[in-house]
Length: 99
Image 1 (spheres, rainbow, N blue to C red):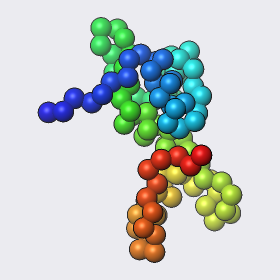
Image 2 (cartoon, rainbow, N blue to C red):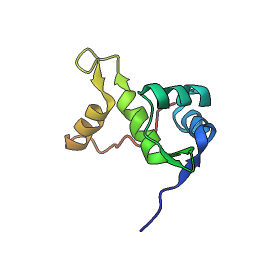
Image 3 (cartoon, rainbow, N blue to C red):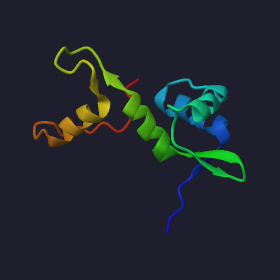
Image 4 (spheres, rainbow, N blue to C red):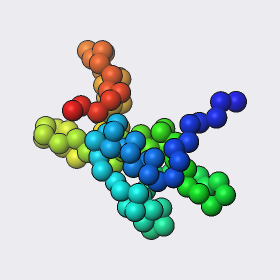
């Protein structure tokens, strides 16, 4: 069984979110969300929080909203991605954020 790559503590998660998605969540904000809810899923090992890239990516995608087109406004990004996969006229797949 392959073990998921764990990002050490909240600093690693914060850096990953900034580098990959261009969003800034400080380690303190991630810590607060871990206690109050609304943050990404994590695991603890010996009292230390660890995040996987998969969980961080899923969390960010879940939080996204598409804006601009009135037909798509407010639609979750996951719905847009699903629509693209089902539309035979689109060969593009959204895998990375657009800069």
